Length: 252
Length: 204
Image (tube, rainbow over all chains, first blue to last red; front, side):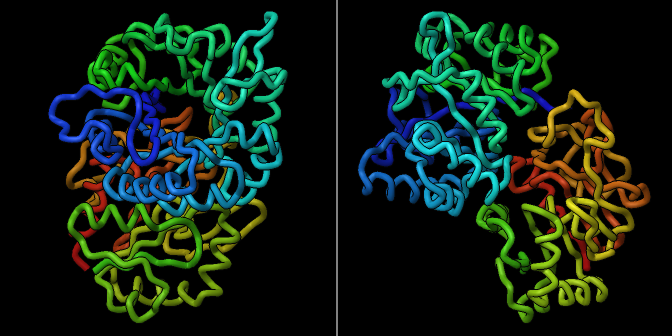
């Protein structure tokens, strides 16, 4: 049986992990290499590295680091941030990424998903969507959730999967940062229309939120979070033990 | 030394790094001399079967691999590289494989329930069918990472492990000095590294 995946997400800017990190035993808490290894050794099923650098110089630094992470960690790596072209796919895949996550780049150029899936396979292309309720409708936001695109999120996701996206990461802006639990209503709406894996993001505050997620929505494949893992509020090994006790299949 | 056959299919970076992590000298190469000198051969692969089989043949490396295996050199096929070991595949047409493992590659949708997602992607537990040198350092029930839409069929005598995904899908095969993993040991954490370590210790 396929296990539910637990995925920590690391935001990297100019080669350093941003958002505070609070771990004992790490000599450099903002080193993507040390943190990646920490998570890999402590039960993470996959890592997401998100490049939030704006400069070309920072981007080069990011690929150098990615190569180093990929040579020390032997679990799947997903890379996102600043992916606008097939060359961007090529750049990060050559550095050891297994999957590439597109968001604003696909909104600007919807052909990007199709072209990338054709060249690298569906399993390589992740469509990441930031969505928020606007007048009662799930609406896609771009540019890190700052800009309302006016697009219906369910339609956009359906279209992405039709074009070859092999996985969906759904980040609910409504629940993100609130730590009140995942957006089960929005996730359910997406799970109903797609047949590819769905990764839940935004809103996890404690272990119970993950148990609730997988119990309420058996079609959700993974839970992604950042700060609750970084600050040690939720320890991945402990989270997986609790999921296991609740009858949810996990790799331990 | 391990030769990782580079025939222009897929990224060999993680695989090469994995061997480095377990302290084994490995080279990604398309040089027939190096493959002939190597103690063992790894055949990787991602993408479509027909395309990969064609590239392996046209590069001339197919015959090198076949002749080395015939001499008794251990070979490990990984993911599509495992599928290439079979007699043939029905992925988009019908394609001939290396014929080292008796059986054929068929779509998993033929055997799994219709509400299961395709590809079979993620961490799944290994069920052992036979004892194998490959499993020297791991246990039944250990999880490994899969990404595939096709599987090894009609190969009962070679199957050493399966993974349950609505059906028991071929996870690993062995026939004399030929080994294959459908999953990615280079992406399967310490379990995967231990499988590679065991392969490195197989006597020629």
